[in-house]
Every structure is written in structure tokens, then in C-alpha cells.
Length: 350
Ligand SMILES: [Zn+2]
Image (cartoon, protein in one colour):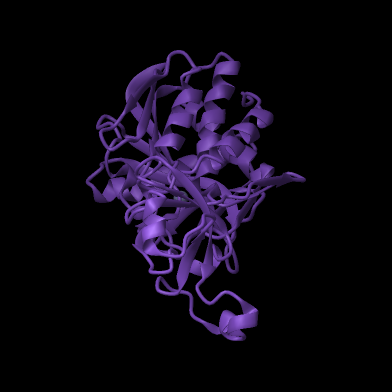
């Protein structure tokens, strides 16, 4: 049986919209709501929220004796205001694992607790070459030396506080989404690309009038970047879990921007061999070109569930993303391959 077609226009439009919805971990509600709004258009999906704020869609299947789940995360890297400096600028604390140089010079939005959004940019505090000379290149980027320059008239802590900004406000870095020649260049393709893959897979089945082989839950996690996203919220009757998250591309990796990858081991150890074999078989049976890889510095939400005591067979698949946790890029080919793989899994009797 051939797989139903994928609406790539829908996928890219949804992805662009989701990428442009700020959602640093802890402040991901707008992105969760965006996914919820799209899935609400598919009758038969039962949508619920966990108390932690994740979205779970329950999808009836032809059978219900071996329920499955797939998980992807909408939360992203970001920051929080740590301190308001005496010059009115902001010191930040990071949310998630990234290096400051990857966001240096980037535009950002500060979301005040009072609901006001203030724009700005993240800079080295000694930013001007004409004032600081070689220090601009030489200084080590750390929490102490990076600051947000607000696009507001302030040169004191009091003036910044008068804008409504306070310690604890969330900060999102601009994704700078650009789609050219099949490439998608943006921050936070991790893991919004995979969220788009899941939602597009749902649409493909609905468009074709198909139902999943098994009762299937789609779990949209909102705390993955800090390590405990899917620790809660996977229904206890689930026997198989597929974590859908980006593949790490770089020197020594088999993954690339044009394929989906099966990850068989990462920092959390090996994945479930039987489940990985099942995913390989599905790719081969359906003509999906895929890579197999190991990610050296990586943990997945599926492993968060394992650590929390989840008793499931677990596999990890996802599109290759270059420069992960940096200014990322992938290609439509990888997004299509990942979506096809998800569809093949949804439809498979095993
Ligand atoms: Zn991720």
C-alpha cells in the first residue's frame, strides 16, 4: 500500500507560523494553543491538556489493544531576566542548553509579567569595536558579559522598571525564519519542525479518509529543553512511544538536512532495539531513505519518560537539522521523509 500524499504547502505554512510564535520553555502556552487550534480542525481527535500544560490528542484507531504515542516538543531555547543593571540594561539567565555566541546580535522580545512586550537585542556589554577594540572579539561570552539593550529610552534600573520589566520576565530570541529553494532556515526548528511533521501527518490521514492502525496519542510537550517534558503526560496504557525530534548534523555524523534519521543511541544510552528495528522496517517497506545515527550530546523526551518510570518500547526519529541550538537549517526533503515515516507508523499493523 502506498502512503497517502502530504500537503507540503500546509506543512510549511504551519511551520512558519509556529516558528514565529515565541515559546521559550516555561512560556510556551501560545505555541501549545497554536497546535491545539490546528488539531481542533480534525474531528475525532480528543484534545486534553495535562496539568503541566502539555497538549495530548487521543486518536481512535482500528484496534485499541496496543496503544501508541508520538511526542514532539513546542518549547524552545530562550532566557529569563536575571537582573536589571544600573544602566537600565538586562542580564539574562539561559533557558536550555546553548552558547551565548549563537544568539549574540539577535533581536529579542521581553515579555513582562504585566503583559507588555518590549523589543531589544542581545549584545556583548563591550559591543563597540571603536570603544573596546580587540576585546569585542576576545572576551569570553558568559552570563556576566552579555546584556539586552532595550529599544526603549532607559539608562537606569528605575526607568527599566517603569517599562514594567522585572526579574523573571521571559525573553525570546527572534527565529528569523526564511524559506528558500526548499531550505528552511530558522531558530527553533528543534522541535517545531517535528511538531509540523506530526500535525501534517494527521492532515494526510484525514484527507485520505484513513484511521491509525492503533489507538494513538499525540503528545505535545512544553518542557523538553530543560529535560523533563514528557516525564508526565504519556497515558499509562501506551506500549510504544516514538519521540520525534531533530537529528544532529555535523562532523562525524551520518545525518544530513535531506533525510530523516533513526537515532539508536544518544547521551541517555541506546534506544529500544526492537522498536528501532520496527522503524527501520517501515522505512524500507515504504521507500523512505533514512540514516541511522548516534548523537553525542543529546537527550530526548522519550528518555525523560523512561527516566520517570515509563514502561514503553521507545524509538527516536527526526529530520536532519544543521547547526542545532544555533541558527538552524533543514530542508523540505527531510521534513517530507519524517512525515512519511510517521504516517507509515500510524498505519502499520505490527
Ligand atoms: Zn528537541
